[in-house]
Image (cartoon, rainbow, N blue to C red; front, side, top):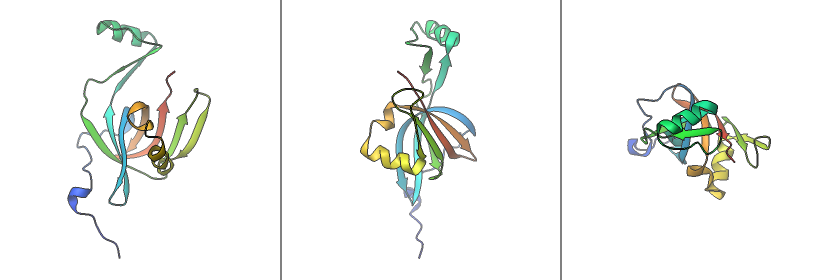
Length: 138
């Protein structure tokens, strides 16, 4: 017998969700209603000369060859395909660990620093996360 969780137990997907590749901070990765969900904060990533110019425009400095901006701290929630491919660059950009989103969820339970500390690129299709890749920073 299949049971459906009460409506309050299933997150509402943001009406402002945009399909495509999005740069985010993953604030929560959780399961509810038998499904995997990601709560994220959309960010803007500037690289190279654009990073330096954007930082200067904000009276700031780019710490490296990148500059991250969070102009809209509103959190959004997306369903995540458990079999979505995940790429994690651990020690350096060439040291890539591959797993599924379900594996990332399991890993985040034992390494809570993944959530909240790392930034990611999410590929979103029809309001669902279909691929995850972390943005490696030194």
